[in-house]
Length: 301
Figure 1 (cartoon, rainbow, N blue to C red):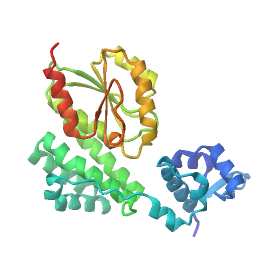
Figure 2 (figure 1 turned 135 degrees about the vertical axis):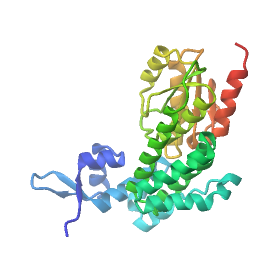
Figure 3 (figure 1 turned 90 degrees about the vertical axis):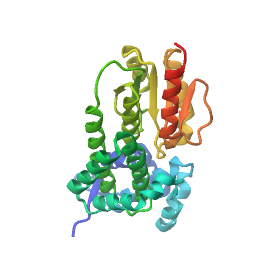
């Protein structure tokens, strides 16, 4: 049986570790230990790629690479945090239902998952669907991925199917004049889009005009887009997977790029422990985001 292996470019994309870092670790620490293909190019076994991905995640949480590389695989896995996010009453009440939705993803039943989610959307309405189904389900999937009970491809299946549902629901909302004008995006290296779609749905329901730019926008381009669209607010999403220590500096840089009259909001689980930043409104929960929008509408012109 052939063991899958990956060239250095694929490993760089998959792990977030640069080619230079991979080569340096190979010389300094003796890991990774790539094979060579017929052309003499490095190729990395799948188990080494999995280990490198875990090491990168732990580095983002403050661990030193030299120590991580020397740590046995089972101890590395134990180091990875298994968050138990506080669950509100809605989460508790729907835990069994959410478990059924997770089971459909684990069974790779895309059609069954979509049908079950559409039924919940019809029953709950878009706001409750976002807050009581999509948000807690996303947390559960993140926890399952971290503890190894979800494969990467299963997390991707969940994300893609849920994105499709949210976009369809947003597109079905009525049009007409809307305010404020909110530009929604994320900074480079922040790839998670579900947080943006959840808040876009809630903002649109509250009468805002949302301008979605997707993820990983360079800061200067965010500034140019905000100016071009005459945005009232720029709203960023940070997932818990984003390195927390980078967030304050990025927010300060973007605040300097944006015109003073444009509000800057930063939300998501990634900002839960970020210190207050001048000129930035931190929104940890979806309820925080709705309160901020209500405050904007209530403020004098």
